[in-house]
Image (cartoon, rainbow, N blue to C red; front, top):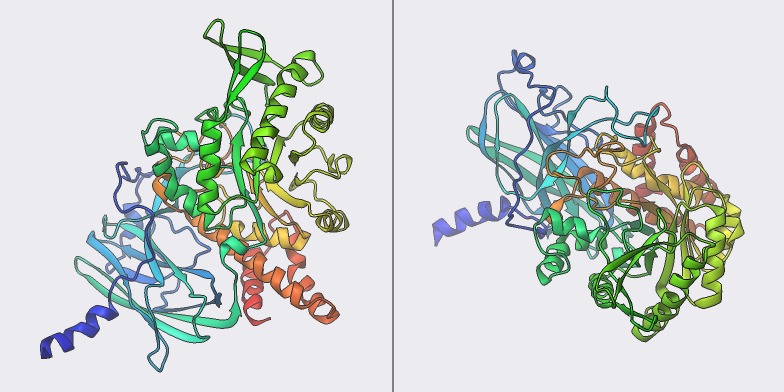
Length: 579
């Protein structure tokens, strides 16, 4: 018993207190790629001892370069109750380290009050990337854009064998309990491996304020989901039971970020197969022998129910009455074959195909109880096409809402559009946003392949993902849209490049529910937007408080990376905790 009493506190203190992992086993190969730029043994010539230190979450530390910044052994995080905060540890070693582990002890106050099981450590891994080229941002991948490694993927493994002459970051996530008492807490972070045993100190300052749960966030997050990519990468039959189970960790992670929109499809791939995987049909259209139509909503219903059960479902945005090539298909009962039809807006085929479908779709949604949250969604379509689509919708299914990603600055022509999203280069006036908000309409903005800053490419500065939501707050947008949550490339675990666009443009998370530096920082920015919303509401009628908030936000109206923007953002974020 005496031995037990002596050893037990040490075991508790250094227990690996991790948040629940989305996946503990994997059927995929998570091996890292070689460095396309080659290793740099000469950079390690004068390095004789490993460095273990806190780094910055604003930095992607190169794998082949020794760490050369300050070496603090302690770090302080601060946040509201209910908030997730992050730190980054860097291990940089001239010699190999087998079985590297990061174990985080309980956080405790000076009086010994503990917070247990609130921290999680994940190894940062490297993927091949390229850089944004403003002269050719959206075309085929140009020559002269050399491949290189970027730190991004957050892996779930508990140990990592670190090669000699390499740097390995470790991402720390702390989920502050909503019922935690305010004050300072401290935990030890123990880094061990072959020939290595270091202990760092992590402080956590918890304010008296409380952030709502993600399901209660007002921020309108719309990251487009791609079910077919999960089926291909994780090698399961499309729409099978196993497919839905494999999607669960990835989509649950999205729900926990406060996602509001379910991405659904109405017919064949609405974006004309711009990704590695075409968007698979969710609704089968059938033309019967007598010329009438039937529609099989089985997959659509299962997908929507699946996402609703995860907590996502303010809107169901259905793409699209205006597919990018205006092609539709259906199964012909007479021939038993699929028939492709070009249905350009304004032509008889457009009305003949869409009118009966919209009637049947609205009736089905009404029966399911989903009609009030469903929008027919269009993406970057011309004013002429929009006029045809909205006219037919009003005539045949006026109860259906409309969503639009607008790059034509035509939103004022459609003041009734429920979910309006404008490109970052065409900001909407705050008075127009406020007017729409008073009518219960949502107004957001989006970035895409032509947006250099801010963005979430694998080569983007990590703080850009935070800046996105500060831009939304500064411009008074209700939230943010990003076209691709998980449109994975051929080998997303190792190579984030695609045949077009900047690397990382097509996805922000990795298979099997693995997160990324980009996604973690995006969530941090969303939390900041929620804080700003709460502070604005509290300051209503207090001109001085509102003025202070607007001064804090003023720099972030820019879509240009101004000098010192990262430090300005860091200071502004600290200000939210002391406002």
